[in-house]
Length: 462
Image (cartoon, rainbow, N blue to C red; front, side, top):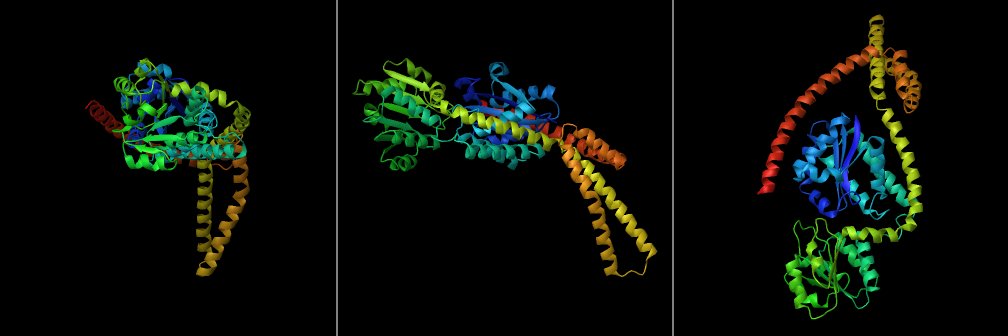
């Protein structure tokens, strides 16, 4: 088995490509099941944020898995392979594990050390687990990665002076205006990102905030926290003349404002001062053509990267500490993985010991037929305890040896010393039959998967 990561992020793909790979919470469970039913994929998790879409998979063979995952991405997201292939990165085995640890701890984020990604990775894993698309490897790996990331943030100062994409948007506004005193900021959207943005704005001196949302009650709830003004989409044009900055962050799959709409708003404005618009949504809320309008300045999420770099120099030393922690975690996972092959051997040894114990007890009872129930119970318990104690130290030693780089040779020698080869072969045959049965089931699921993809395509077209 192998672990792979196939994905694209803010470094490899511009926002116009990334937004095509956005996926809603409602769609993700279906996509996970379809991905799990894809050929060669044994386990899978999807991590999709505004800055990345990544598929983590346990596969039975490396040379074809990339092809199958790309085919899934093409079919599910409806984007031709030629359009996105050059933006993809692929990591295998140790590199894939290291990448997950870096993503979880925020080292691979646009804003290094941010903690929001940890929650997103955790939620992605828990969803996959609930959909039964994870197994032994990912249940262990993701829990280890999440635990390691929590430790990294608690034992270093990388998360101090918290920053995020919303923080970077506010920093951009400060570069433009110097400060937010006497400036009016309009926030479109009332979700978590908008709330963080308003908090940063308030902390930087903004006195007047207008919160625009389709649901006026949500807009009011956020606006009330900062003595702001709540406004519906139907009425926000009333405030456009006094607005200096618009920051948009909604979950809409369509544009919130087009060029034509903004042109109309600018004509209705009494003020001749410039209007700055910052789009931190993926998919984008604001029409890219807006930047062609005189006196309007539009920035999207990719424009924030340079600002982010200038604000995060202080975190680099802390990141180096986390890199060392990741190196140690890689060894821990490798040691755990090396012991996986030991499970069948220990099971075979325990089965053999149990059979010997049962045969011995049967022989004893034949030779001593007058034993009462209490005596039989005591003898059975004591003899079983003796067998367990004899096996305890050898099992502990082989567990330690199996974690080393020569673990396979140690397991082989252990099997030979206890004459377990024949039993292991018998158990392998049983597993093989179970595997064939699962393979038939997988083939049926793949056929259903192809039908589901066709249905998904038809629904997308309509």
